[in-house]
Amino acid sequence: MLTDQEIALARASMGFALEHGAQKVRVTLNKSLMELFGILDGQLDKVTHALDRSLQLSLFVDGRFGSFSSNRLDREGLERFILGAIDTVRNLEPDAARDLPAPGRTVRDASTGRELDLYDPAYETLTSEKRREMTLGTSVWQRKAALEQGFKLVSEEGEYSDSLFDSVVMDSNGLFARHTETSFEIGYEVTVEDPEGNRYASYWWDATPKLEQILPSLGTCCERAVRRAAAQIGPQDHPGGKCDIVVDSECASKFLTPVLNALGGYAVQQKNSFLLDKVGQKVFSEHLTVLDRPRSTGETGSRLFDSEGVATQEFPIIDKGIPTRYFVNTYIAGKTGMAPTIEDATRPKVMPYGGCKTRDDVLRKVGKGILITGFNGGNSNSSTGDFSYGIEGFAFEEGRITHPVREMLVTGNFLDLWSRLIAVADDARLCMSKLIPTLAFEKIDCNG
Image 1: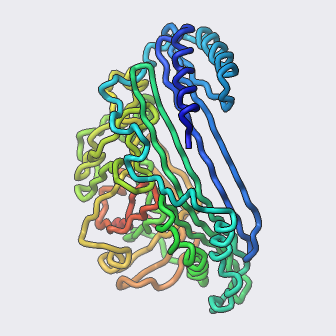
Image 2 (image 1 turned 45 degrees about the vertical axis):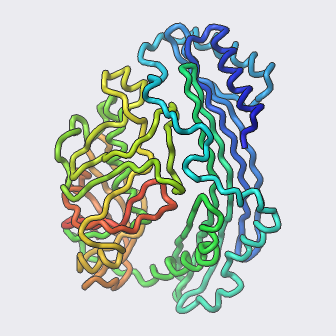
Image 3 (image 1 turned 60 degrees about the vertical axis):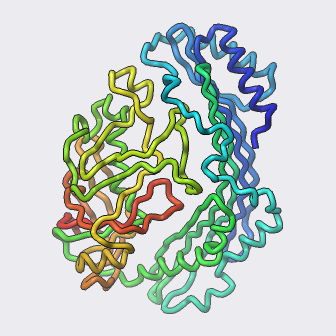
């Protein structure tokens, strides 16, 4: 945790910069601690202890701007560092668009860092021995024979980690904001082999801000990864053409993230967005509504403010197919004349549609098509929205998976894709920052 002395030093650094030539200053003080235990084929393979601390300075000097970072937090060293930074900024070209956010936009309800209930005191009770015990308990290597039905478990590699992150942002306009959170994570990658010697790999993972919430996943994570890998055995060629697709919640961000990026102010300013001049227009299916839910208590990814200290708020990013705004930070607002908003989507959630709760519900609703469970390479064009991705997954008929598919591509354009949305489940994974559930689209190009 950040100490009172460290926070006082950050405040003193801001005052020192103002006294020696800076007209405005923002200081961000970060501290993180991580413990990681790795396991390989049932044996403890590595132990990592990482402590990181840094102070970042944004300096506004004589109409110029510069950003600097240091991990030396002694007063004398910081003062020398700040003086050098100010001299450097004076050598830069003026940039009238650079400024601090207006005080009326900055957060006022993040003074302790605990407001979102993302810090778990149980973190402080964990010992190295307890972490080691939990990690070894996640392995299935010692009981792999019970799982090997038609395949052999070739390797398992897993990691358990927990971390503490504490951050303070302050500026010369009076901002003081703090964010504190713990995180507990488990992840496994496994490889299996079929009787013909063909190998298949998969993974599973989970993360939560509370220790008690991760405990159930410690016992199931590796086994789930094994079953996901084994499910790929026996892939078959599948005829290409237009077909309905269902996209698993584990990988559905591949289709939404480019849309959110296209709403970014920088992309718009650079005219590198397929959603240029599209705010306020119906460009997607009316079934698509995406809310930003940044203030969800106790949920990974929630934040009360962005990196500038601007307060987050719940709002519809896309409302019944209509993008409502761009994400515009203070700098891009100054460059373009656009009204400043928040710098990025914090915790976007795609709202359910079609009466489906789970992936199985969506499969039954769609009936026949391709279930996409992962992507293998490919690319997208941020200017046009065109995309082409390699996919892995399964064919399904009458709502039931029939066989794995291989060597297939899904191609199209994001504007067209999202106009073909036919179902949205309610199964988004809370461990992800983007709450994107299982999605279904009709008549999408899938080439074998």
